[in-house]
Image (cartoon, rainbow, N blue to C red; front, side):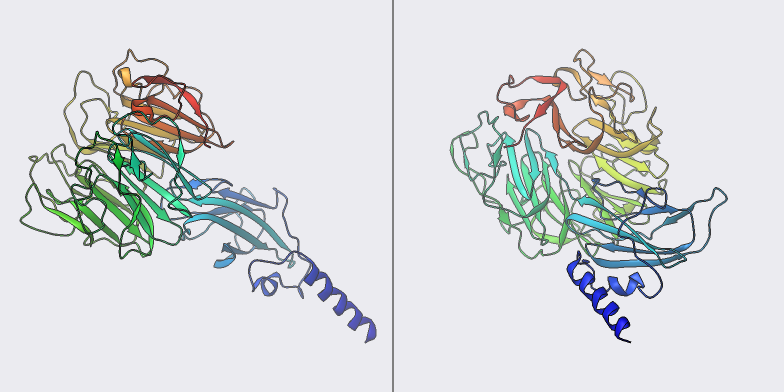
Length: 512
């Protein structure tokens, strides 16, 4: 009896002095009475198939999978919180047990995902990865944003205060990357045209920049400078009232969308053709909402995007919905409408299914399917739909498969340019190029690329992308950042580069 008591006391001492689990129920799951526990697993015993450690996720959904060589029980935890427990009894003919975990929601910013595998003998194998949910690179018409350790850095054009510093020297060159001190603990940033948005980890939303159509969502539309080209104060980042559960945002030309943690969407700004999606009627060219309004008829949304005057959403089951402008077939329903036609409620793109991620430029939309194929529709005058052609092709009103892409993992777009990130970490672009050098292919003599061909020079191992109207950024797996395209007003953040010049080959970007 005495020896048993000493053993138990020794075991308790070892557990109390060892590394503490982030999950208070972990000891119960470890099943100490059933067998020994192992804090880690060799690669052959438990393999995390997806996602990869260090991935940056741009949709509000995590899809994870693991592979083992035996039956057992899998427990998945997110930031120490148990998400699911799965009994996996079958082993495939190849000797592997592939387990696809039901999709679950990430938290804003960093996510630590733990996988605990309980073997038939009671032994516990454990692995963990870290993934990030949010946007760390973004760009507008001529300003750029970077997110580092919860802090926002901006550079480029600042005539409307879109850099968020609260002051402006007018419409001059701002080619030095500057840290914003007025907002912190940011998990995601979203820029377009001359407006900017930041999502805080606690779900609050901050906006700054031009506001003539109420696109800052702060209850007014009279904050723009009287003379944007003149130096003076500008509105600093301001909190959008009434939102405490945001996970993602998107800016169009004059309107904005915010995805909330419950899978619903709100919008604000210009609503002349129904781009706010609130079901309103009788709109005119000056109809706006300077306060957030709910987008009707959408639930379980995992991504939102916005174009010039259209909006789109991706739902968890892989469906795409679009509303607003349809002048260039934006709605993907095979119809091309007038510039003033109104579509104020979301409609499903009927020909698409199993979509994993979406992107858009000014008036075209991209969608990557689960099999790695990409579909595009809308404005195509610069070849941005990627289906071949010459000259200035007409708009494509129905989703059409992009040529030469079979293994895409994500898509990105802005202005009249498009990009696909491939599963080997390289990037291919198509659409406008020329003197603005949008596509990063090393030359500017080709004004339009009508189908994906050459990869962006020197970009390998890409983990995240930021797309503006004519300039772009890439974050690589080693933490380095590269930019290319039109350096208008210093938007690439390199004081040593010529302004109003296209960088046809990516250049390194250093954050302070």
